[in-house]
Each structure stands twice: as C-alpha cells, then as structure tokens.
Length: 434
Image 1 (cartoon, one colour):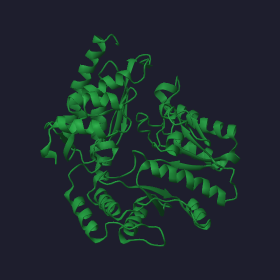
Image 2 (cartoon, helix red, strand yellow; image 1 turned 45 degrees about the vertical axis):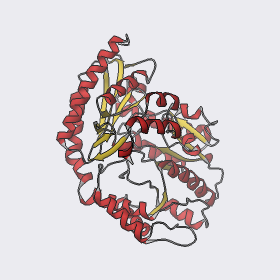
Image 3 (cartoon, one colour; image 1 turned 120 degrees about the horizontal axis):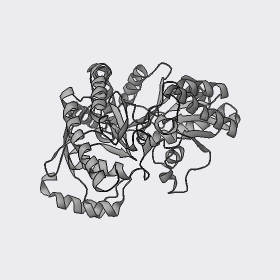
Image 4 (cartoon, helix red, strand yellow; image 1 turned 90 degrees about the horizontal axis):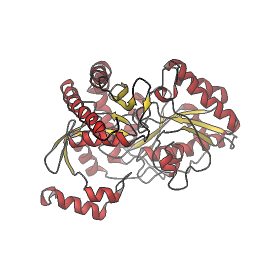
C-alpha cells in the first residue's frame, strides 16, 4: 500500500480520518503529518526518502532498535499456533506462563507476580485499583488517597492523568478525580536555591512527609512516582531523595509505587504493559478473593511471545550491560561536552542512554525563559528539520535513543545536534528572545 500513494495523498487521508494523540489537529492538518515508512537500527525513513536519526526510540520504548526480523518470526509462529485466547475464566496459555516466569527472574527480588495490561496508562489504572483493594483487604478502606508529583506523568486515562501532575491535562475532563494529591517535583535547578543537590534531595523528599501529615496517614494509600521523570523533562532526583522517601513511607505505612515510564524495558514492537506486584501486596490481593479487574487482551499470546523474545535479547545479547559499562558512560561524557558550551543551555544531565538539557535565558542566574515551552518548541522544530528526532518537554530538550546505539552513531547524532543548537541560538537572537 505504501507504494500506491504519494506523501501528499497519505497526508490528505490522515487529515481526513485520523485524530492524533496530544495534538492540535487543525494545526497538524494544515502543515501535514510526517509519514514514517521504515526503520532499521536507530534510523527511520519517511515517505520522501529522508533518513532520520531517532533520538527518542519511538516514545522511549524501541530499546532494541528497529528491524528485528527474529521478533517478527516469533510473532508469526505464535499467530499460527494460538493467535488469541484470554486469561479469564480459569485459563492460561504457554506464552504468558513463560513470560511471567522470565520476568520473575529478571525483576528485583520479591516481585514474583505480574498483572498484564496493554499500555502504561492501563497499568497505572490497574495499580490504583490494586492499591485500594489491598487496603480494603487489610481492613483499612479509608486509605484511598494516592500522592503523585506535579509535572509527573502517569498516562492519559482518567486515573493516570489525575495521578499525574500535568496541569494542562487536568484542564480537560474535570481532573483530577477525588483521592489524588500532589507534591512538588525534585528539580534541583529550579527549586534547589542555595542548597547542594544532596541537601535539596532530603528537603524535596520531606515535602511528602508534610503532605501525608496534612491528609492524615490513615487516609494515604501510596506514593507514586517515576524514578526519573520522563515527559516532565528527564528530572533526575538527587541521590538522597529516594532513601528519604522510603524512610517516610515506612514510617507512615504508605506503599511506594515506582512507575517505570521510561526506565523499564521493552521493544515497542507490540502493545503490552505490566504491573509487577511485591510480595506483601500480592499476598494481600490473593487472600482477598476475586480481584474484579482485567482487560480482553491481558497477556495476549502474540504480545507475550514477542515480549519474551525481547527480554531474552536484552539479557543474552548483553544490551543492558553494554549500556551500563560502555555506551552509556560514553554518551554522558559526549553529551556534556557537546552542550555545555552553548550560551543558552544549562542543567546538562543524564544517566545511561536517557539525557536532557534545559534551555535557559541566563546561565549565571539560573534564569529560565518566561514562557516555558516557547523556545523548547522552536529548538525541537530545528532538530526535526535537520532529520534528528529529539523531544521538547517545556524548555527541556530530552533524548533517549535505542540501547543498541554505537559510539559512531552517538558522535553522528551529537554532531547534528550541535549544528542545530547553533542554529537555534541564532534564531533566538533574530527573534529578540536572547
């Protein structure tokens, strides 16, 4: 079908029938969507033949890169053998059993049970119901409130969007729903003032203590947060933050939920999500009888089979270990070298193959631009025009390429990015923004 139509024809049909997520549809239809047609490794090609560096691994998720024919073969075999059956009504199937066994092996000790969904958003809504059901079973039904963070992202379902702290999402749909509270995000650059990062980490964690006491510990069910905030701009808490969060939650008997939005593992080839349940909560849910929750495609056999192949590849091909030992440290060194030199770039940061920087008005004063997001969009669009996909989250420019990236590809990507930043800073001056 792709060879039967021109780019303009694809765009016309897209505008006529397709409503895109998180999009100003009228504006997109006027400009026309970019039509992606092929992927290989870290690269994409559009319908006009442009070769594009995917610095975002799709949406943070194509960790093994594009073009894995072995995954396609796994999917083909599973579709021939058992294309679908549900996991309701006292049934299971080998694909989901084998995936569950493997996940129990590779996740941290104590996480031996998994509930399958089709997306991260569904996982968050599942988690909300699990947490509240757990406390019901414990005889504490009043423990219902979940605490998230401002600018945190937990998906776009009603529950996930409510728990998340994106105020522009709350403005649509009368959100948040009851039983959700928020504390400030642990962004040292903006909120740390004269504190060291380690000092600030403890202060930021204690905002949770204050919120729990304000609500009442007998009413707080869980604290939910991303280990590293993704859509919020790759906000990496100081090292002192999470140990203090754990201490506070233990003190108040509040559950901790880590929403691994961008820190988890996957290939992005097929839609599948999961909620890993620790021993304490799993035993409570099991003791409580029926858990009245689930999805038609929970543990879909084709998705489960490909997910199994993906986890095996990440483990047995040494992809994760290589990021830790080699390509991750190389990226972080080159990322800082490349962007620290620019006048309007600061807070250059990252870990592994997740990294970001913030566009600032004045580095010496740690002064942000007044309309947070305006210059970020300008910068992102320059990247796109130069066939490099990075993302603007407000005035944070973020990057998370496939884990299979090579050193040569890091150098290639950052070479393009440096030229884009030079063009961006010229554009700032031309518009009178600098």
